[in-house]
Length: 609
Image (cartoon, rainbow, N blue to C red):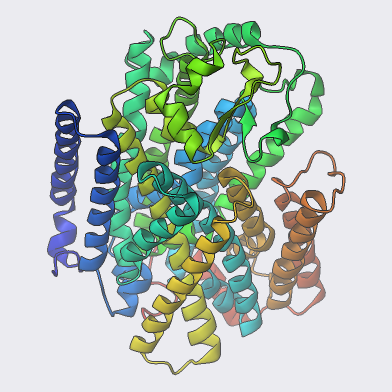
């Protein structure tokens, strides 16, 4: 049982351990394929895939249990760069990346590539501005850095509030994704599926904290990347585009443009006619919008980049490495492992849409009789859980492109069935989607619970609390925040991608400039940081409410997905003005800031602070 306890032998043998794990998972896939050929029901295969992988993660979580503060909060600071890169990629490959991003591209076209560019570019900011310096500081959490750098409990409390709001918004999207997968794989209602997903998430993270989350996330990355790549390579070969789909899908896009023009019809039925679903119409052209379209693309990229560099659960991953150099190297590995999926997402969206539209493929449905389409098994199963609907708006009995409604969140999950692939691939994709959503939810819930237990409870409420009590509080908070997230997710307030964008905007509104200026500007002081976090967060939240819920006209194209632009600008101005208008930090703090930027030497803070 001590194998995963962070011993030197375990760390030294990581390549062998995860090599055996990967081989075992491939053997499991082949076994499921054999069972399918033997006539085992598809629903049974789906249950086996999800249950087996969740059981493996739970087992790793159990074996990684700990009562050591350093291990619970930062995995003992001994995670090697390559494996930290894999864990970070899994932490990052959320339900939005795995489940929803390709669906956004599928439904909305190239405009959604702003998410890919922004999320990838955000890691450049993390590498250049954040990760090595936060690791040198030696903190446990992001509010820990804010509280120590600026001094006083007020700054720490403001950071905790922003962290909790941003992370909670994000975690509801991940639990939404687990509910979507569980609803389809286990054929249970979505409202029940979110609680099933939550149970798996808690099993992975509750007992071992960051140590358990780290080793389960490495395992989850292996599952999710295999699950994402296999259908794309399969469809590319099946459709005759070759063995490297990421390099050749330009020809598939050209074919798609022809088909969309051929299928386009007159009056389009509004998507609002079918609650929560979108019509498979030709993506809205931005050619006539000129500068506004470019501005909207750039501002969304900026929000995703700055949000990435502000998200506490991502920054926490770099607190787990053995050294400052390892933290910097981890960012490079993170980008590589993330690149594997992001480089593939546009190809997946393109090939899947061809499966639906191309009359030369047996799987196409547009232009076919609605009665025949309704008889398809994948249409029936996804319709039964409310994620697909056909509407004969003109009464001709033929399915037009604007009469097929689908939730964009299910495109990746439904792709194997749409493409007519063996059901074992559907089970694999469901397992991959569950791994992606669970890994991110683990990190988010841990970030929330750790901030509340370490920065609120231990640092502010009860500084004399014993280690055992602190970890019990952390676990209770983990369960409570997870249950609250599942309850909110079950309400379906917004799409997965929408909730994720909000989380990024909240984070950048309140945390980006206090973090960056805290590292790079010695003159930044406590009053400035409090003003930057408070006013930035409030300004962004106010703008979101006015645009999304009070029908205010967006300012120069800054809609509810981009409200972080408003919040971050207010945060920067408030922080600079207030810092310059008040006394500069003491000499000790300024020396500490200089020391943080030196990429060598011991951490600023002690191991247990």
